[in-house]
Length: 468
Ligand code: UDX
Ligand code: ADP
Image (cartoon, rainbow, N blue to C red; front, side, top):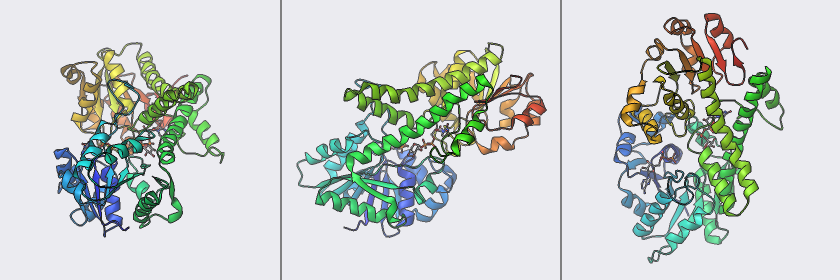
């Protein structure tokens, strides 16, 4: 079966870039990305490519090439479902904020809504591909909804987890380490999986396309993210030992990373991992383990999250202690709000937690981030419901000029590793700050020697503070 028409439900960080690449690489396939959010769709269709709702290096050029040719963004969900032979579900699956599994299980209501909509609209057989990160066995839930619709339509469900990392989505999609496709081990399941393999085979070498059963595919996604997050929490645990003992975590990372059994990636100590996947996926894993009564397994993975929370607290506390145990009414500048560089995504960003902690201590915060919009920063804080919206606006300001953000500031906290921070005129920044001027580097981004020569007190995660 050769697919000519694809629909993707959900025009977010996963759906948008993934479909743009499929459309670019497969000009013979019509790709329609739909979303309920009209503003989002309008932004994807904006002639000014700076307004695309997702910032990813290189994505604008790809959208420019394919949009209007075989890539379309639309709010007509039913029409796109009806026309497509293959439907990708890329809607969000946040952690539940209510009821059973609150704070831990994935909220599948958007997925279920999609499944019901597909069931209602479909008049011909379809292949449904789950692309969102989902807890294991979601495919069977989708299948059960689709199979009980009453119309005589057959659905094949595939799991095709997304391994792209934000900030590098375009290269990750163009040159994936592997593409994983999980399907039913029936002749129909095999045919559906083959149809999806054929799409990826347009640009991905066949040996990198793995087919597995559905549950292995779903669990592999959670496992990959749990292992990656575990590495970050492990090196973050070592960062505190380094600070206490005088070792330097960057040197330790380099030394252990050269061991080919360990490898060099994901060993960068930081103020804590963020992003839409790590915490959510580990919570899923913990929830699944607990639901099978595997409490030791659940505790093991939960510790990765606890370590991450601790790292954010530790960073805040160290900052407060260094500023003579009080930050009340002191101006603290945040460089970076996104959860990592090269993205405008802020979900679970460490900056949010650190800001919330400092605002509770009555600090005044001034934020500069090259890509995150003002409204997003306030929305992130308001979501915590620690203070009213008006209080957040009074305590935290957002600047579009990094030098203005630092004026009369007591301390600068680096929360995101944006490359441009390294290129700033740090002497000029120092000259306009209150003294002693302290830089708190949560990403070990800057050069200690250079900053100390200028006169800064410099703290970096895992290598401690000037004078210790
Ligand atoms: C992750 C997975 O990498 C990707 O495969 C999956 O599809 C989605 O989840 P993403 O969340 O976009 O991708 O970013 P990632 O690069 O994994 O970084 C996650 C967090 O860990 C960021 O906050 C990052 O700053 C932090 N991190 C990463 C570290 O603190 N140290 C490291 O060494 C690596
Ligand atoms: P992700 O990082 O998984 O891509 P996002 O939140 O960036 O998550 O994107 C998910 C998108 O899915 C949102 O734009 C949201 O409006 C959209 N969405 C959620 N439910 C539906 C639905 N039933 N139909 C269409 N779009 C939906």
